[in-house]
Length: 340
Image: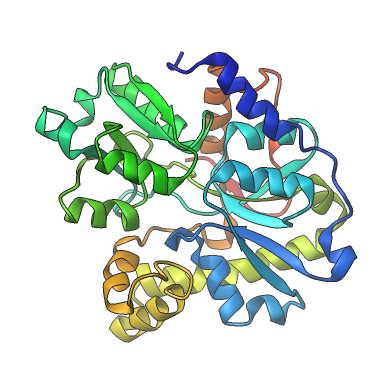
């Protein structure tokens, strides 16, 4: 078991699971569909589909709502404040699915061999003291947003593979984790490359490993919605996924396959910069946006093997009910599922 206060952990998960009374879908109330997102390059499918009119082409009036962590997004779906979202699987999300409030309906960001992915970071203080590889994580403190978050899952998987024991410090928001890492209040963390590489470039932290070495096909983020939308708004949900998929396809072709050459990349960076690193001038934001390029699943294909592994880990840690099944969590009727 990981080193977390159990009462505190279950309290966090229980607070998320309490938000289970679903109102009517937002589309029925005011014709506005709210999509949850983080200001990460990995959410570019939503940004592109909005900017290039793909949602509008499908008759969808989309409003983006931004969050700073995965678990609050899951609660917002359950409460009806958000209709669709893209984020990592968390213990809170799984518990809400168990309450009949949420369904995963597709896949988004994935680790893929040959494409630079999420990095394992060490604070400068810990690095100078010998934390220069994941094998040296024993006894160290690993930053997470909340107990049962994707950061928690990744850290635990790395620790298990290396045969080390770590403690986990919940800090709620990505910005707080970054501050704690830079100041040496925590020793290590893992995050997407568009955040990891600039931090390492500043000298404040150091890259000591890759998540892909431990989870080579990790389904990092998924597309999810309320159980009501998945069951009763099939046309709307299918249209959302198709429009989102057009944005994803543009992103992959431009940023990974370089189908449009440098000019295509520059045009895409301009679009993404409207949502990511908005506090930086374009010339300073561009390298981080480009460095953050990772594959987003075409057609929202879902790696069901990775989702199963995540569910089983949350269950093994006692963070979610042991009886929850994949069918409870996932509605696999909308996209292709695969095992990798």
